[in-house]
Amino acid sequence: SLSIGVFFGVIIVVKLIEVYILHRFERLAEKTTTDVDDFLLKLVRKLGWPLYFVLAMFFAMKTASDIPEKTALMINYATVFIGTLYALKISSALVDYGIEKSSKKTTVGLKTFTFFIKFAVWSFILVLVLSNLGYNLTSIITGLGIGGIAIGLALQNVLGDFFSGIIILFDKPFEIGDYIKVGEFSGTVRSIGVKTTRITLLDGQELVITNKDLTESRVHNFKKLKKRRKAITLGLTYDTSLAKLKKVPALIEKAFKGLEKIELDRVHLVELASSSKNFEIIYYINSENYKFYLDQNEKLLLKIIETFEKEKIEFAFPTRTIHIEK
Image (cartoon, rainbow, N blue to C red; front, side, top):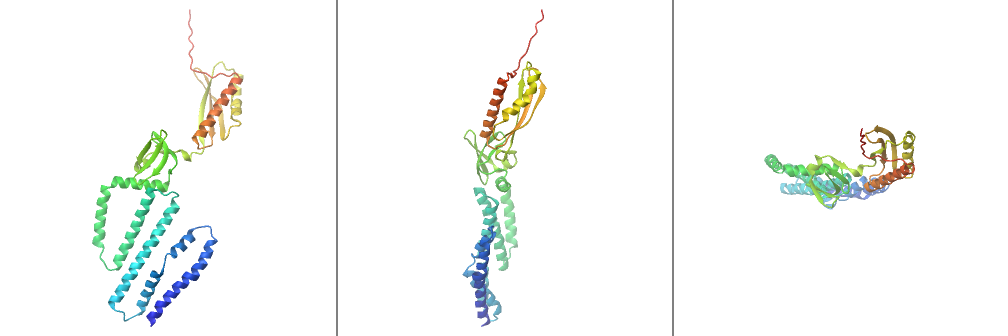
């Protein structure tokens, strides 16, 4: 009778927790902005009657003294089996939630990495279960370790690319849609896979590059570029008078007015070259958009040309004067 009372008592307690405490917790979760509590609620609601029943049977068995050995063994196996299933469900949900939070985009590489994480967790749970059931796992684990080393040596290049892909996914030096430059190639990232990353080049070709090569290369990510520095040199003829040379900085500043997202840093006469008096202009264009950068740079150069033509200031070009003595 005590065992029966314990059996129904456990079921009643668990049901009360589900109905009342979880209901109150659900109301509190609605008032928060984070989704962690919502995830935990969803996780707890995955528990169901099979688990309640097995728990009740397990605790009832502990209070009984006259249960046959075979019956106790079956209940123990059922408890381990049901507990393992729920452990697998909960661990899978935790892995999915963690991966989802760490990466905004789902890719083939991310799905594969998720599978490997789940496989590792499931293997660990399986080892614990078999150990609790009395199996000697020493020889099995040793064999798996030797087999794993052999497989690792055979697939070291593939595994190197795989783990490089994982580094890219989590370190995020670039993402899908970013415009990057790797060595002499530049283009838009189209996909990040288990072994390779695919980049669409400017001429439309698709570059397939291994993830290991990417992590070992210098990658220029132009999407991260918020401010572009530009330096140009203007060469003026030696016929340009001192008065006009002194007006150049003010004329350059005037050319910058009215241009959007462009910022003048400095203008200086920096060199008296062999055939020109050279001014250096340093400025910034505050945009990561390359077309916008080219448009604004073109507008600036045209305004400088227009301003100098009005002031009758001539640009120099390489010349050589030959003096002939009679």
